[in-house]
Amino acid sequence: MKLSVAQLITWYGTRRRHTVSRRTPADFGLEYSNVTFRTANEDNIRLAGWIVPAPYARGVVILCHGHGGSRRGTLKKAVMLNRNHFTTLLFDFRACGGSEGNCRTLGLHETDDVLGAVTLVRNHSLTSSLPILAMGQSMGGAAVIRAAARCADIRAVIAEATYAGLDEVMCRRVRMCVGPFAAPVVKSCRRLGAQKLGTDLSNVAPALDVARISPRPILLIQDNLDIVCPRSESNRLYAAAIEPKERWIVPRAPHANAFRVAPREYERRVIDFLNRSLTVVALGEPDLVQPQSLWTRSRLRGMRDYPALTRLV
Image (tube, rainbow, N blue to C red; front, side, top):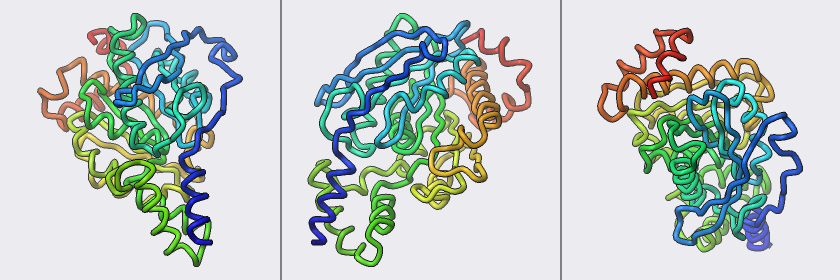
């Protein structure tokens, strides 16, 4: 019985999601281009997405959805970024939406999907001249952190409702589902998950990677009512990160819902962070400067200076 429960949980967590977006950027009055590209993983899976160009674009933001979601879940954020002059790439992770693949890997190979997205925007005619930034929520945030630790082309990271370690968040979800029977089910899930993913779940841990993002900036967004990835996960990530780092704790927001709960504050904070990230790029290459002093100076300059600075990028 306990093994059957573990098998069901493992199947549900990794099965393909056939959600196909019925809404497109055109429904919000935005032009877009359909794109396909290959993951950076050796399995060479083809991924599907949209590039939404912004007028007078300051940068390109790779938007990454959460576990079980699709690119349509990031559409409203793309609209918000577009009106603030950020081009966006929205795409479906492996085994989601219009992308290929039959197994979601909970952040493991999704990291390679993000790296594939970086290769696309680095070479696409609409985005090749723009600095690259990345935003992700939940599993997407984990994939973005792990990808940025491996790829210096990602100039700044925003991660919302993100786990610090896959093993811990899996244990928490199992306890929520089965209560007093959790211990043996967790043990079986760990074994089955390792077989499915080809690695121990403890190896998928953004907390082990996040320090390598510095001296590039990172913003962590914590939803205060999140029971999937509670504040303890954010605490671990924030403690492991190195400056420049910031965190925003959003009152009354459940898991991955900060934008819905506080849209104006979300836009203000996110755009301010991205603009300051571009200011750092304009003032000097991130790996050649003292990050904390330069990041502090960029904060003090204020929003009025961003247009002049970002034109230098």
